[in-house]
Length: 237
Image 1 (cartoon, rainbow, N blue to C red):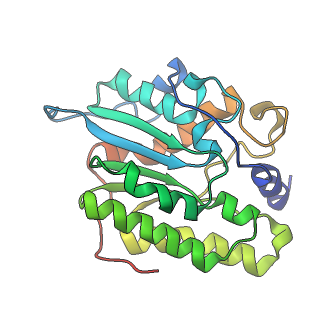
Image 2 (image 1 turned 90 degrees about the horizontal axis):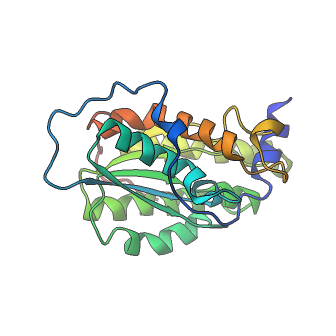
Image 3 (image 1 turned 135 degrees about the vertical axis):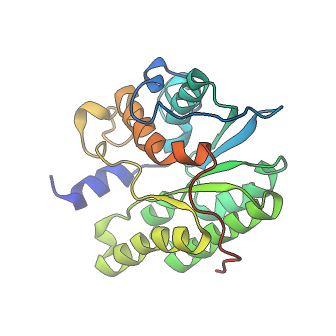
């Protein structure tokens, strides 16, 4: 199936509601050899900020991919508390409005999944870039040593090649600028696969959510060990 078809199916109704929880299947797979040198006196904080894909539209609380990641973390004895702040239908501007409240407590690792709804609505790419940069800046104002996983998305091709190309560039550019780890496309291997999506053909089902958890885990595991790139100074819109 052509990539542009997958992108349309994956993004048409990303806005939705969901929750978080746990799943035994997330405790198996690659990178399970993560080791901890010394557990701190209190758990570190892993914060997921995202859309309905992060919230887990149509799934039981224990089936959303952040919940599956949390179960794997627990099974490995890693010293992290996982907070799922996925919010249905949210644009990057909405995430920016929420972020100060979400980081009232320091954050050690941030998984930032936003922008899909900007693409669905054909919103300004420049504004999305500025919003994501501002989110990162505000998180780092509270937690200067935060490690960030920036989750990329794709814009629907019906908006034109120029828009989709500029949209796609935002995520690697911001990852490079801010010393973040980039996950290029959250729905890789899931978008437009009937067996991995709910009846709407858009949002992952339980099996698809497990695939998302595996995809995220591959990029996230090194950050949980304190590895990966660090901040490279202040960004800018």
